[in-house]
Length: 297
Ligand SMILES: [Zn+2]
Image (tube, rainbow, N blue to C red):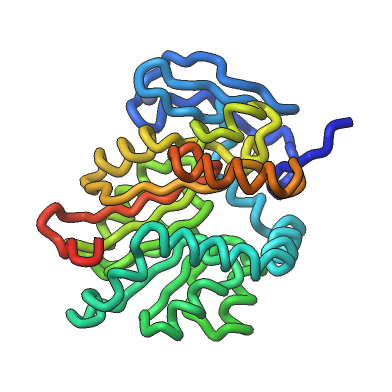
């Protein structure tokens, strides 16, 4: 049997699913993309978005992150906390986030929201750097941990149900979240609504056009039951632009999964993938307003 390098996921179940139109362009014409055991992906003939179809319904997806699987998810996040935090810091640095802090703080802009904040490790770090932090985490055990252990302001529910005020945040972060959502378009529009003019959205997600996705296809580490959408730089950029954002910077990283090749080969692939934009994961840095603060780009 081939070794599995796939990311943690809730197990495949036969939840209530239905065929959905393309979440990006509304198209209903699809090409088969690839199938995994128990689920499969199609590519929109019009815009190229790759989505799981048929797709489990909202209530079924929400239930995955509670109860027994919620505890499993928290354990997974805790076991990998240091490495995930290191990757997130590096991604934010690559995307130019830390260059912004001085200009934002000088203007009294400190309000930051991390959607899908897990154990709150990144939020705690950013709080220590001077940000006024809020988190959203739908996994109840992870939310409780971030609140009780790290004393963070972490809300439950999906983002849209929190009813944050218009323009209440200067920065919104969402790392490895958007691919889990039934309606990524609605999510991006909500982020736009709660950001101030000139606010920033930094969104991280696996890259379906990356080297690993092309090589491994259905065996790709990110082709998992919990990933309802698999974005490329092009499809995610279009989703952001359609919501009103301007994309300022795109970075990708990761050539081969850890353990899948000798260290020297992996190192070469990692550097090559990053240099040519074929990395396994991508971060897009977008602003709400073309006339917003662009210092620190
Ligand atoms: Zn489409």
